[in-house]
Length: 479
Image (cartoon, rainbow, N blue to C red; front, side):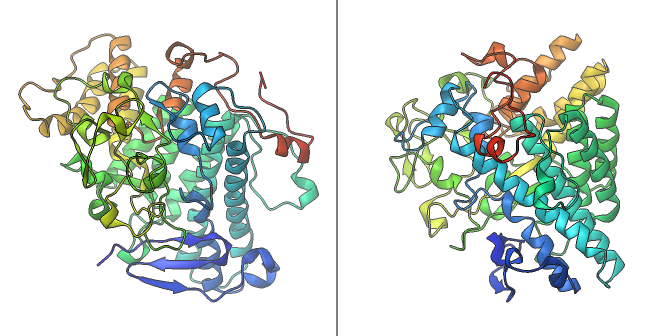
C-alpha cells in the first residue's frame, strides 16, 4: 500500500492521503471571507493543510530554491537547452532583479506565510479540542518559520510578517535577517511544545516536534549561537526516534522515505494532481525520455570524494552506470555526469514531472554535522570528531572495502576540524540544496565561486516587481 501523506493542491484544498484521494468539497479560501470560513475544526484543518502547498517542488509553484542553492556553485553547471534563461543567469551570476525565478520564489513563500498567519489569527475563535487546536497552531508557527528562513537564505533581510495585515499595511520595510532568525527560534521552541513527536500513518508529512527543534537549531546555527545549536539538538536527540539508516540510499528511494533519519521531509507523490516532484524531470538527462537536463554535475565535485566513498555512486551518475533503467554514457551531459538524487525510473511514475521522491529538508545526518560544527566552533574538538565520525562510519560501512575507506578524522586543530566538517557536508549532503548557503555563511563564497563579488553575491536581488509594489523595500547592494 502506498505511503500515506499530506498533500495540498493549490487553493482548491484537495487533501490526498495514502492510496486514496479525498476532495474536500470547499471553495477556495481566496474566494471566501476568512471570518465566515473558520467556524469548525474541519475548517481549521483545511486551512492548515493549505499552508503546506507552497513547500512543493512542483510545476505550479515554480519553486527554484534548488537553483539558488546549487547552480551558482562549482558543483554543478546548468545544462538543458537554454529555454530557462534564469537558470543560465544563476550559473553565471549575471541575474538581475527582473529574473523571473526570484519573483516566483518571493511570492510563493509569502503566500505560505500569509496562510499561516490566517490560520493563527482565526483558529483561536473556533470551539474545538484544545490539543488539536494547539497542534494546528504549532504547524502554522513552524511552516511560517520555514518560509521566512528560506527567504532569508535567498534574499537576506526581508519583511517579517507575523500577523494578518490590510493590503495597505503590507508596505513595510525589510527586517534584519538576525531578527528573523531570532523570531524563528522563539516560534519553533513554542511549536515544539504543541507538536506531537509523531503522527499516525494517515498524517505522515505534517511537521513534528523534532522538525521544530531541528529548524530552531538551524536558525541558531545561522545566528552563530553555538550553545543554542547544541541545546536544541540535545532536545531533538532526547526524543529517541532519530538515527541514521544503515543504507544511505534509503533516504532517496520511494519505498524507504519518512524513515528514522527524516527530521523534516516535504512530501511529493505521483498522482497526476500537481503534488509530484518536478526535479525528476528538470534534473534528468536530456538523453532520457522527457528529461530536461538543467543540472549537471562537475568534475570538480566528483573529485571531492575520497577514494572508496560509496556516496559518490549514490549521488552522481557516471559512465556505464545503471541510470534508472538505461545505461549512462558521458554524452548524457556536457560534463559527463548527472545527479541521481530525486530521480526515478520511468516505471515508477506516470508523468516525468510528477515524481514521488520527497525532499528531506532536514536529515539527521545534517543534524549530526551541525552538532560537529557547533562543538568545533566552541573548540570542543573530541565532541566535534565524535559527531563527525557517526556520519563517516555509516558511509564507511557501505564501502567496498570498509577497512581502508573513509578513515576516522584525526585532525587536531580547530581549523582542521572545521575543514573536515565542511568537506563532509559537501559529500554527505550533495545536491540537497545546502552548498551555496553554506559557503555564504562560512564567508568562503568569494574563494570558492568564480566571478563571485563579495558584498553583492551573498544574496540575490529583491524582485523588481516587489520593489515597484512596495516603496518601503530597499534593494540588496550591487543590484
